[in-house]
Image (tube, rainbow, N blue to C red; front, side, top):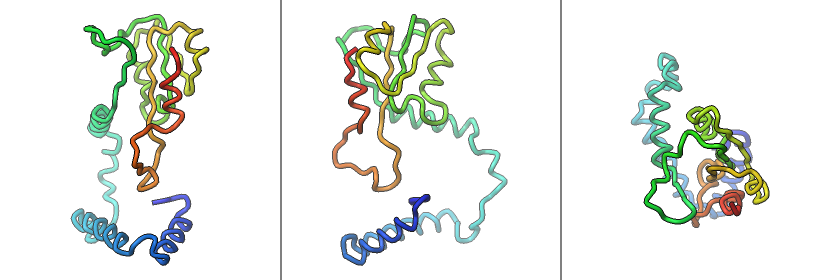
Amino acid sequence: MVAMNYTKFINGLTSQVKKNIIPMSIIDDAVKRILRVKFAMGLFEDPLVNKSLVDQLGSQEHRELAREAVKNSLVLLKNGELTDEPLLPLPKKSSKKLVAGSHADNLGTTILTAIKNIIDPQTEVLYEENLNSNYVKSNNFSYSIVVVGEHQYAETFGDSLNLTIPEPGPSIICVEL
């Protein structure tokens, strides 16, 4: 699971099993689950990649499914007074919008790109990964869209017992507007 440093991972895991830090039953359980899925998928009967499906990678159907997954996993926070006016959708035309945050412009079709693609061409969009109060106050934004999230991870590295957003997320969210 650690593609760039798999030998360090294997050595570390082996050491922890030998020292009884990680019980062998955990390893056995993980292997059983992985093998069960691989057998169900028929990977042992036909282990090679089906190259006839390569043209489906990145298809419109896959992109729509990915967008649906993102839409169902996003959380919207709104600061300020409660009103009867709906917050979304934001107007396409305004003088200036701020898009900020560590996750606004980092992979694939980004939120920043999507916003630039749908707004009125006269609306100025500024992007800042990290914010400070002076920048925000000196630019007179009509709207601010802040996008933060977890650091990328695989497997247990990202497991957390408290549901907090890692820095710089909270610092960006809490910038005085």
